[in-house]
Length: 321
Ligand SMILES: O=C(O)CCC(=O)C(=O)O
Image (tube, helix red, strand yellow):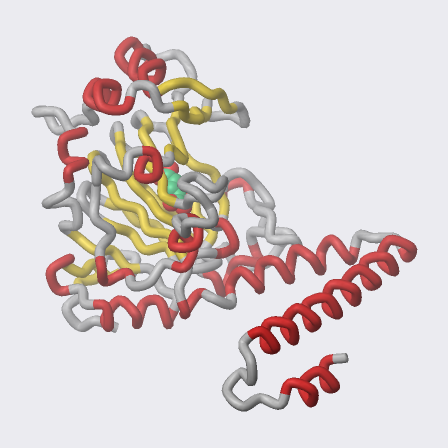
């Protein structure tokens, strides 16, 4: 791991943006360990979303992007759709008593590519996930852009979860601080069922078997301008300690490539274990059909590529049929 790191009390290293190289970051990816990179937002245009008192300038978001449709969470299980202008009105008039509305998963980068709110730090390396969604075949929003802006008042929170397909995520606080509670991937089965679903909404509610040691939790306060790298399979919950605006991406690269398979495999095994005999048999049949189909498609592709670098196509066909 990078030797320029200082360690916070919980052991998560903090490394200055200017000293974090791609090679150094790759070590955290390979070890699947979190790291905080400090001073990331210094040159970001998103700085104009902060007012002169250092608070989220939600009025500026209204001016810039007021017509965007976004999803807002009410702190229970409820969500509602509204415009950024509608959210800014709620923000300006919010009192102490009502539910805290948390604007999440706003696809700002996809909706406003010309605005260039921020630059993804190069040290994070390749991003197969968003590269896929931005390919010409997918169109701009393709249903799957994984680049988000979050706007939430102090006290709003995100419940226990792991990220989509056990991808990596990074999260940067443009303004405000967040408290993260993370469960190392090696301990994740203690907080989920066999199908990778969390056992409770919050870590404090996760049942611990009598006599079992407490689930080890890594807790960290992420300061303004800091990027937190959340590795694959690390379940986490997050609380806004101040009024916050943050940006986060889910992403995948070579070191995380196997994690989606891990998650899909565990989910599938869980579904399988709940099937009756007849459905299980149908599923097996479907598996076989798909496998055969996939093999045929592979052979066809190789044929289309001609000799495929000297491969003996008929021999390959024999092997696959
Ligand atoms: O900031 C938040 O409320 C949640 C962020 C999060 O969970 C994530 O980036 O995966």
